[in-house]
Length: 326
Image (tube, rainbow, N blue to C red; front, side):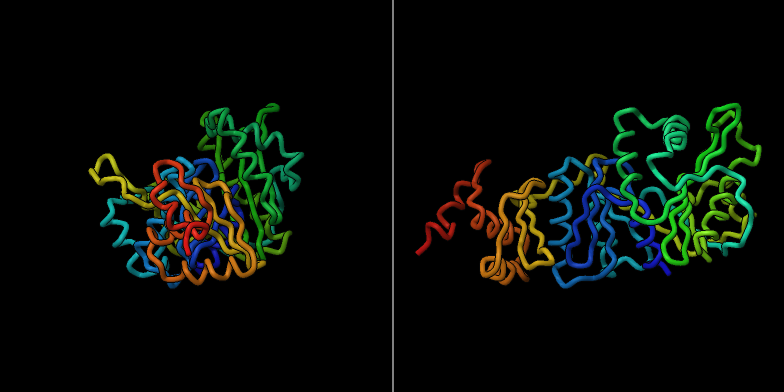
C-alpha cells in the first residue's frame, strides 16, 4: 500500500521537473513545497549509495534548492536514513497518511473539474493560505499540470470563498489534499463539509478508497478525520540537510554534471541543470558502459571529457578529453 499511495501522491502533485535515477525519483519545482522538491527513494537501485546521495545533492544545489529526502518505512535501500543522518540531515514534518472507505453520498460543495474554470478556488486558496504573490504562479502551474481526474471543491459565504479542498482520483483511490478553511469561520463544520463533498465527488468518479495526509501533531484534524472513518496507514517524514546548525561542511560533489538515459537510448548530459550535450547510438552506449559502476568524481570527469566544458577552473581536465588523446 505504501508504494501505491506514494505514487498517487506524486501524480496528484506533479513536479515541474522530474528525474528518475537508479530507483529514485528526484523532483524539482522551484522550491514550492517539500513534496515537489524532494528525493523519493522508491527502489534500491544498483549504484553505490554514497554516490547517489552525492549526485542528488549536486542536482539540487545546481538549482539553488536544499536537498530533501521524503522517507517512509519502505524507503530503499535499507541503510539510506542512517547514511543521511551521518551527513547531518535532520528530520522535519513527520506526517501520517490516513485511509478510509468511500461511500455514496450527496455533494454539498461546489466542485469544478476544469482548472481553467476554478478561479474562485485558486484565489480563495491563495488568500487563506497566505501564499506570497511570487509563489502563486508556481502553485498554479503545478495544479494545472495534474493529468488525473481532479475535483476543485470550495465553499462560499456571501460571495467569498471560505473553504477549499482538492480531490484527485487514480484507479479506485481518491487522494484528498489542500483542505483549508478561513480563520474567521473555523469550528463551524466547513472542513468536514469539504471533506465529505470531495469524497462524494470521488465516489462518483469510481473511487472506493480515500487517503489524505495530516501532520502527526494536528489534533483537531486528526479528530475530524477520525470522525469520518479515516485510520492511519503509515507515516512519512523528510530528512533535510542542516549544514549551518550541525556544522557539516559542504561536500565536494564534482563539477556540476549529471546525466540521464532516455527511453530512446540517448544520453542527456546536464551541467548545473542545463543540457549541454546529447549522446546518441555508439557514443551513448560507450558513455553508459564507462559510467556504470564508476564513482561520482570519476563520472564527473567522464562527463567533462565528453562535453569539453572546462570552465570554472577545470582546464586541467582538457588534456584528458578524447579530442586530445591518442
